[in-house]
Amino acid sequence: MVAPQLTVNGDAMPIAPTPPQTTALDFLRERGLTGTKEGCAEGECGACSVLVARPGVKRPTDWVAVNACLVPVAALDGQEIITSEGLATDGGPGGAPTLHPVQEEMAVRGGSQCGYCTPGFICSMAAEYYRPDRCAHAAPGSGDSTVQSDAEHGPNGFDLHALSGNLCRCTGYRPIRDAAFAVGAPTDEDPLARRREQAPPAPVATEYLQGDSAFLRKDTLAETLRVLRERPDAVVVAGSTDWGVEVNIRSRRASCVVAVDRLPELRELRVASESIEIGAGLTLTEIERRLDGDVPLLAELFPQFASRLIRNGATLGGNLGTGSPIGDSPPVLLALEASVVLAGEDGERTVPLAEYFTGYRQSVRLPGELIRAVRIPRPLSPVVAFHKIAKRRFDDISSVAVAFALDIADGVVRKARIGLGGVAATPIRALETEAALEGRPWSAGTAEAAALVLRSAGTPMGDHRASAEYRSAMLGQSLLKLYAQNTEAVSS
Image (tube, rainbow, N blue to C red):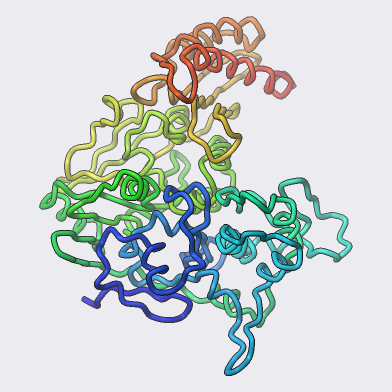
């Protein structure tokens, strides 16, 4: 087995003797790449973002921005990353480097003051700059009047949500937005653009041992399950968006970490007439772009799930595996009547998500089992909505999350499925409210009566995010909002 190493800005760097819990951020800074900064150490500010070459959706390779403060450097074994220092083009012996287009635009448009956050912004901006379908839009100054833009999308196709995980405390966002909306398309000479046409680094098996700690990545699901049987103390990670916070903020350590994010068995997406099966190791960004709106309720979830930086690493398997009652995906998957496919050494079993959670951060998943996939039955209900009530519009933890999936025919609710988060020790189905809707006319009276039932769903408690009374009020209001937004569409 080859000694663990990664390629940084074109240079191979061995990981040893770095301790296995070391983040990519600390690894890079210890090697002089100090453009990568630590601001929050929990994936909230984006000062640490770097680019990673990942399997592409529309090209062989996509440049994906991730939070280096959350990813263990051992998880990048065999992979290829670019930091803010690696974006500029080498000027050769004695020559000055040429700034990358996103660096140039940030400089000339005043997108930096203290500069602490700037390298992270630039890496996130570069990921969007190289997004393949972005350049289908007209470049600035082209005169193409068919290109639509708004406050969050530039005429060059730049989606500002690509920067939703980056914070700036002194410059202000207008010049940063101006820089984002000014970049053109990558040229044919751009080495990072050309790199997208080649395959990304293949997954490699990793066995990194230092002292009493180990970081392991196996080639197959069967080998991984064998390790989990032998090491019941192992922590399983995919994007490390949850575990990375535990390591950084709570100083958690594990004697054994097992990575599953690159297992081919966990990275399949199958669309059939009866169901859609989503691999538990696919990132939310990959799911979003591969489904391309084919599951409308998931399409509503994705923009409200943390930031693009987090979605580039987070997985459905990880979100369900933590068992958190405030995870954003469980309410949506409950409304979609999803099931989880659990894999163990003795085989697979399928469990309806409504029966998966058994208590606070507890589930029916047995020691040694992994979530291999999430299965969503078809056909899908046509009237859907995901309402996330939080203190911030984006990139925040839910106070309450409500997902609706309704079938309405001839003005009557034929089927209702409602998933809730943040109102009980586990994500739950609002069974009483579903019963109050089904078989009744889709009318203001039905919505108001069902909203009263929904207000009492779960066992909401007060905390620093919201009071119990507020949570109850938001539950009822959410159903009234659904009715107000869908009355015309259903009646027409």
